[in-house]
Length: 131
Image 1 (spheres, rainbow, N blue to C red):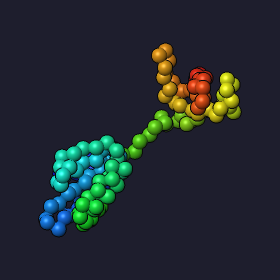
Image 2 (cartoon, helix red, strand yellow):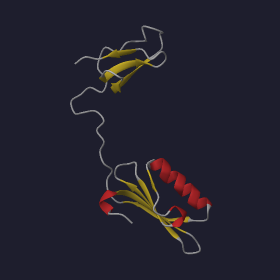
Image 3 (cartoon, helix red, strand yellow):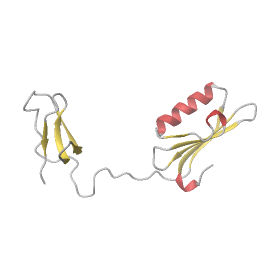
Image 4 (tube, rainbow, N blue to C red):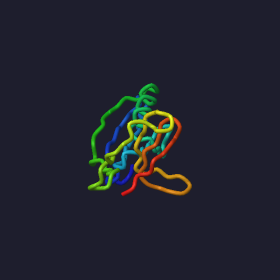
C-alpha cells in the first residue's frame, strides 16, 4: 500500500466475498491510510482512534481481522526541548482574580506575545513567565 518506512502498524481484514482491506497507522502516530473496501485511498489524521473506529465499522460489515502486526517503531515526539523543565517552579496556587485553578501552557500566545504562561481555567487571567 505505502512505503513501509512510514508504517508503524498494519491491520489486514478480509470479507467472505474475497474483498480485502489494509489499514496502516503511520509512524507519526496520527496518519491512518486505508487500502481497499469502501474507504479505499482514504487518509485520516485521528491516529489510533481512527483505527479502532475503522476496525469496528468493518467487523460490523462482516469483515474479519486476518492479522495485525507492527512494522516500524513509532516516531519519538519530544514536546519539551531537552533540558527544559516541563513546568517551572513558582506556580500560583490559584488565580488571583477569581480563585479558580491555573494551568501551565508552554506555548501560549495572544495578539502581542508568545511563550510560557500560567493561565486561569475560569476567567482566563494569565501570568507570563520570564526566563
